Image (cartoon, rainbow over all chains, first blue to last red):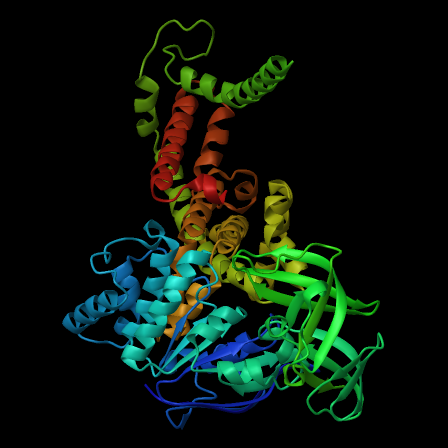
Amino acid sequence: MARLDLEKLSKRYGDFFAVRDVSLQIADGEFLVLLGPSGCGKTTTLRMVAGFIEPSDGAVRLGGSDVTVLPPWKRNAGMVFQSYALFPHLSVAQNVAFGLEMRKLPRADIERRVEEALALVRLTGFGGRLPRQLSGGQQQRVALARALAIRPDVLLLDEPLSNLDAKLRQEVRVEIRELQRQLGLTTVMVTHDQEEALTMADRLVVMNEGAVRQVGSQRDLYERPADRFVAGFVGRSTFLDGAVEAPGRFRTDGGLALACAGGMPGRAALALRPERVEIAPSANTNMSGLDNSLPGTVEFVSYLGALIDIHVRLSPQDRLVVQIANRDGGFAPDVGQPVQVGWPAAAGLVFNE
Amino acid sequence: MRHLRRWALNGAAAVALGYILMPLVFVVWLAFFRQEIPSFPPDGYSLKWFAAILDQRKFVDGFRNSLQVGVLATAIGLALGVPAALCLARRPFRLRTPVASLLLMPLIVPGVVLGTSMYVFHVELENGLDVDVLGTFYALVAGHIVIVIPWVVRLVTASLAGLDRATEEAAQNLGANPWVTFWRITVPAIRPGIVAGALFGFVTSFGNLEMSLFLVGPGRTTLPIVILQYLEWKIDPTIAAVSVVQIVLIGGAMLITDRYVKLARVV
């Protein structure tokens, strides 16, 4: 395993930047996740690391040596593809052995390492099967074993879980993460699924429109999003549009005066996490401890099982989503019901435009 | 009403199938007639016409010539057609659509037109280069390559559509250079298309009459031409027997091929 450095990496197609000035340092043994909507450049970045796309600018360093212009077959990077890309005409063992044969290892070593790799992904005894005789989850593990067998300097995962059903996905997430820790694999994973990203990563990179928007831990991204995009993409936020009148004072376009933390005077959006807002029936309201306390009307309720989303109309222009836990004897809102909502000033994040 | 519709459909299919099979049935039947001038009903049955094939050197020579031309044309057609199909399927270039149509053209152009134009071309080539072209074995093979290529291009292109390109990237990621990737990953994946293209190309070449008529030299005739020449002065069932042998060989080749690659999937 080795460290991986991306230095001002860019990929330009004509005037369009698919990736722009991406610089990242991935430490030996670190699990880094590139997160972003489709078309944000995360896959292009990963493919530049693998060598399938030649960067227009910048450098890729693997274990300190510059591999920017090396073709894929000369880099020691193991990749797991979204479609798994197993060789359909080769058995599971032959699939896993492929990279070792390319490295011209002696027959006995190849057999031993194939066994080891299959054992790592709990597929011992499946070596003789063809890929099409395996379930989706098993195929995914073969793809992982194949990438691990070559003992890569870096493991690259391109949406590796997107073809699995929801239940299996949760298990495989944990498995991959444990394997990665146990082997100390330097890993870069690409995903658009934020839950997947949050549960697996040591560190996350949020990308949009080809650029890195924020790098940090799960907590950094959620509690201190760098911009409106990150606030909306990681977790969920309700945005109230308006303006900061003075630091600490926000007025929505609907005319509500709200207390907020900081902000520069001028057009801005106030972002609120749905679970940070308190809600109570109007009748027995006691929200005096909160900086903001407003009346509203329940407009829409969506029942999610453990949680309930309540959409509250505060003014003709302002609507807020409140999320509450579904407890015995807890608040059970009805559409049209008058309610009181409130939150501390610090819960509202201000993003100037 | 639904019954009626199904009956109509099945009936139409049966008529079409019968229409296609009828000549084959008669040719096969005729091959076993005893008398020399075919007439119905037959006087009796015999295998002597099959024996008669081997007595006539021109049938045996024609068969050998057709086989040699077909095999060589198919081999070269594959060497040219497979890379062409890969290029058409993967490299976006400006003239892709016209080039793709051009490569399939020999399937549409009548054999006589193809033969005439090649004949003229060979005459010009011979005059210009001052070497023997017309009527040579290699000129004939060159002509047949033209009718093999469309089949290879068409069927290989079809099987390329089912290839996950990520498998090629996976191979490169594991350390295989493009050459190794092509032979170990791409070729096995498009093998059904290659095999089917080779088979249909070979059959087309083997059975070609019109174009070959213009290109063969004296003493180097192919089987279809031998059959035609024989028919000009004799109509005994030898010809039917030759046809039966051809049908059995080609049908056998198809059945064997189908065991390894399902032809229905690529054609």
